[in-house]
Length: 409
Image (cartoon, rainbow, N blue to C red):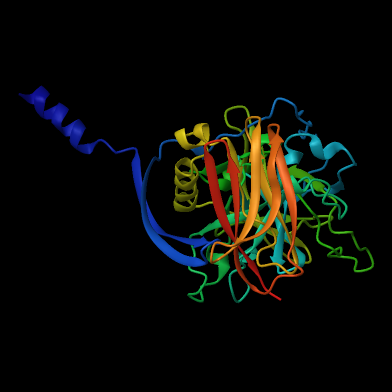
């Protein structure tokens, strides 16, 4: 009997290794322009000191060794070497290739907007303030491989169709509460570029990052933060690396003694033998002497991971059946030209037509042409059309899909 009581006592006082966190996830659908929220409850094993998502190395890319030994380390602060410009051609190395450039499109005007990091084949990690400035930006595009103001492959440019944050951007809350966002892309550009993981440190960040070599990849700010006479073209990739001494201030990781500062949204990441490459934060604020990276808290990491797990990044039945994939035109709205991207997965005859909202055919861009597997980009000029909503329809073998485009003059 006493043995039974002891066993019951051990069971009763045994600490659970599961933790449950719950909060609200805010979602913006960039295609339908709807803003919604979802209450999310997630459970995790709190006995694991580090939780990460997977990372991927495409077979045709090479790892560039980032584990650089530094001779000098600043005491009691996070030391970063001066950022170095990445030479031409090195952008194809992994994980340099996972860095993306973000743009905002407004009719025919495209402007530079922040950096980001691929964290799955179709998700970009960036800062929350990169998607909102008094209002949500409905057209944000990610480009993998942008360099020196040259969009050399428009097929690598794709629209962010959903934005996820854990801060209600219309509530007046400061982004410093959690200045981090996840963008879901229309096309899975990470397939060719690779991605790093996301990571949540479930122990003291200061202790984990101590003596840990850390890295940052981004596009630099246009002007040097310490010397206004030094101006960058804004599109060079830069890399920084250093060691941690003391890091956490609330949920911000501070980097001191920086050289060329990176753009908002760039990732701070580490690599270890157990978890590979994973991001621990996204650049939120640059001051004269420091840069501050928003670190993941448990809910943000787990909620974003849930989004990625549910987003259909694995091949499903629909992907197997569809032999043609039609993507959203860009820019949209447009005046007077736009580009329509689509993908063919098996050789077949394809037609692409433009219709008005009454169903009347306006233009035939492709008429029953034989297309080999690959990505295609078709330019549409609506100079002779009036403002309004139009449909573009692609027809393949046993496949038909349509999307809307908006002409505003």
